[in-house]
Image 1 (cartoon, rainbow, N blue to C red):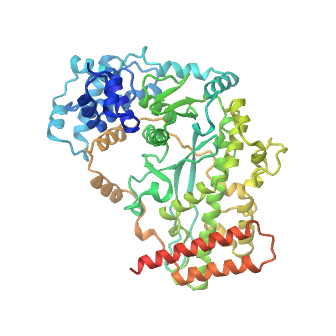
Image 2: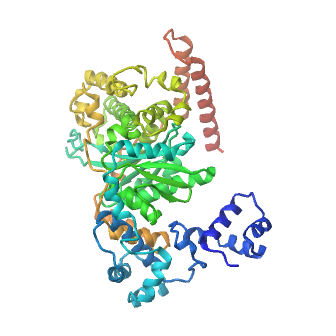
Image 3: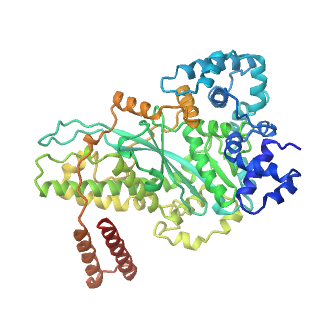
Length: 580
């Protein structure tokens, strides 16, 4: 008996769980133990083959380990899923796909940064888009008929769904699901270099660049936070060379031509979230808005999925809110999570910049103070990292409750008393129905701005603060900046597939892009000297003395001292290791 790809994927998943022996799996699937062993040896190949989660593809009996047009098929599949969303009226007939496949084959061969094996390059050069290839493509990736693919028609259907109907459907789908398995994600623009002139110092020119990122946050109904995604226009920032951004900052960095969210970056994030679900042996329900890149990504992961109901990818079920849902009313991230995140980011940024400004004034630095040189990638990523971990669990849960997306049973399982008594929600009976007000979210930042404005008003102007009395305008300086790109970038599709298979000269591409673009270099970064070991310990001692002698009402005074002692231990250990 030969197993299908879907069955082989089930075998490797069960084997990886360590709950079954090869003999037990052989009995379960009615094959020989040697067959199970051989399947497990092909684990990586089988996982790659079944990644698209296409129902038709998973019924195949064999893996295509010798198929030389794999990169072409994958590029065409991704293009096809994107076109179904971007241009749902386009007729994707067999003839259209044959012509598009030949066009993509030429583009892959001509890609200047491709490092194709000879046999793959020859196969692409000889490719004619024959009917035989088309039949094989349909077997590998499912039917290409516009009538059989639900994606295009469902977009029109979901647009007509009223709010209450969709809420009832979501409540039914989420009934009985644990809070830690219900997730949502949302993106927003973050300007990290304000378009303002720099103060002219001894070496200053008075000109400044500007920049922005697209940031995505994923949070669960239990108040848990996942890694954030940051999307820029630089493929591989020089200042991040050798840095594992996920390990160091809880950031998954992605890039696109516009610096906005696109299908490929969304796919990457969903796959990462899926890895967490798989690691926990859970199925996550993910609720997203109907932004074009989100829908494209879902269709790439599950071409047989349905936007009107849901998509399935391994350990994820992906649900969509209709386009007529207003994010500011129904999306948990837009009900206070994003605002709190951005406020903390601005606080950290302001504190660092003002500290460096004061140091330059005290030391009478002849080079002057140039904010733009402190707004580099590593500082920005650190501030984002702090902002992520500063998000309050109860604030996240409050936003979920007020979104209306959770069924009654799920809300009943929450500790509403704990949520409403958190510092983020001191007035549960306010006009916002328990949601934190703007004044509360931006309170700490407003205090900082007011204090600095009294001593150094010019400094605030240099960093882009036009009105120190309005912290909200500083936090929301991006306004309604675009964050999702509805277009199709064939170059990125091709390069993404080539990179997946190891056929892309990434170093040459990075070097050329840095040489051609106005990207950040080490010359753009202000030099900051890390405090010495003895200086750090002296500062810790000052804090401990304050906690011991102060008569101020300080909550968790003893716990703070204990944490400072742990910091001293860590500093001493690091110093001892460095001196070995």
